[in-house]
Image (tube, rainbow, N blue to C red; front, side, top):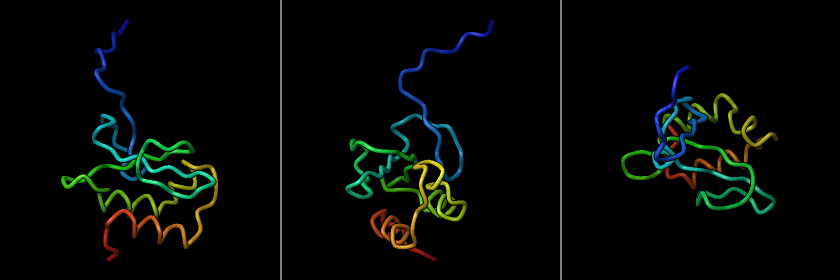
Length: 96
């Protein structure tokens, strides 16, 4: 039987690039009745995206997640155009 190594930290998957990373290398974006938050501590459905070197959301992962509608699957509800724009603006990633 194969033994798993002791995990020192939970591992999560980025919804953009689908890479598995330690939780500290990702940013959790949550959606609740109060809207979308980036603090990672809020209740509600969560989605994880890779963190850039500056600590913000990685632009390539955000672009991929929005293009593939990965937030819809993670949050189990349809994401509107206004919410997409809000996520992009609040993430600090410039739209190309």
